[in-house]
Length: 185
Length: 157
View 1 (cartoon, rainbow over the protein chains, first blue to last red):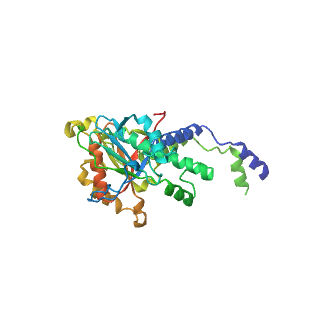
View 2 (view 1 turned 90 degrees about the horizontal axis):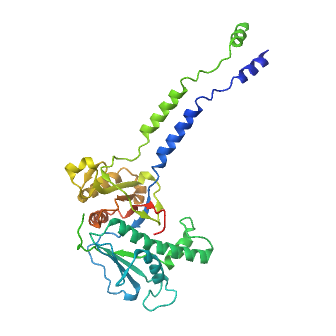
C-alpha cells in the first residue's frame, strides 16, 4: 500500500516552466559581472620620491637608451627619429646586443632605458611607448626562460628562476622629469 | 492512521510554480542592485588606451582608482572641458591625493598595505601634464605600486 503511494508521488515531476527564468537570471548576472573584469593594465613601480637629482655622470653613453617623446607624439631614440613600431625590436637589440656592437649595451645588466616625455605628450602615445619597452624586456625574459628552462616566461615560474632571469636582464627604466614645451589640453 | 492514507491518495500534490518567476525576478533585481559596476559614478569620460603587456589586477579590495579624463557632458557647464581628475565620486585636484590614499589605507589591515595598488584609469587623449602631476603626488605619498589601466590591443601595432 504505502509502496504504491511513493510511486505515485514520483510521477509528479518538477515543473520546468521556470527554468527559463533561472537561465535568464544566470545569463544576466554573468553579463553584468563580466564587464567588471577589465581591470588589467601595465603595472609599474614608481621610484621613491627624492628631491636629489640622480647622478648620471657615471653612466657610459653606450649603455643608455634614451627615448624622448615630444608634444607632437614623435619619438627620438638615441638622437634618431624612430617610429613606435620599430621601438620594441630596436630596444631588444640594444639590450641583448647579439652582434657585439660597440655602441650598444655592454651587457643586458648594464643597459638603462631613459624615458622622457613632454607635458603635452598624448597619454596614449606614452602608454604605447612604455608598453613597447616593457614588451622588449618581456620578450627577452621569455627568450632566456625558453633557452634555460624550456618554458615560456610567466609569473608562475619558480621564484628562483624568475630571480635569476631578472638578475641577468634587470629592467631598469628611468623616467626623467618631463619637459614643458608642448601645449596641454 | 487510515485518516492519513486517505488524504494522500486524493490528489497529486503538485507544487504551485506560478510564483517561481517572481522569486527569480526578485533574485535578479537583488543581484542587479547589489553588484556594483564601479564604486563610483564616472564623472569623467575615460577611454583607456591599448597595450599588450598587461597584468591583471588581483584582489579588488586592495585597489584604489584615480580617473582622469574630460568631464562628461552634464558637468561641462560647471567644470569645463579640460581634463580633470576624479577621486572617489567627486572631482579633485592632485593635492587631494595624499588624503585620498590615506583614507583608503586605514581601511586595509596593516600587513596588506604594501600590496595596495593605485589604478590609473586615464583617457588616452589626455596629455601627460596632469598624469605627471598625479605621479609626483603618488611618489610623494609613497604609493609606488601603480597600474596604468589599458585594454588588450586586438591587432598588431
